[in-house]
Length: 177
Image 1 (cartoon, helix red, strand yellow):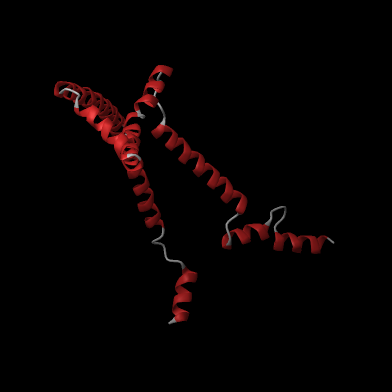
Image 2 (cartoon, rainbow, N blue to C red):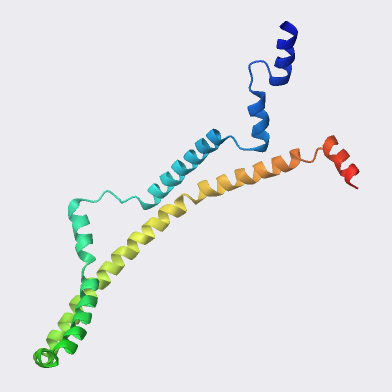
């Protein structure tokens, strides 16, 4: 039994799983691949979380942002509603439009100013917030450049290592010609 045991140890490795190690040369270890995929997804989600994280704003700011999203859709739906009303009951619609015609012109100017300032201020605030986010991203650009240079150095090192002549590969190439 000692000789057979030693022969089996030589073939299958003493305590090692040589079959599994050999199979991993041809096929990825599913468990290790799943662990790498899990780590990659976790890193990706962490990066997205960092990019899209909401700043620490209070409840009032969040409520006001929600309310600020209402006017444009409501105005669009209101215009569609006017078209529907004009088609359903043209006389009713004409009477309402005659009432609007009686609104004095300075009041229309005032409405235009209020709407312009509202949307202009919102546009400016969101634009400034976007610029702050861009500045934060640019501040991290040095880290990104450093990481890219490290990756390029790894590629150069691996290319240097692969310049060694592989005798088995050279013999195979000679046998193919």
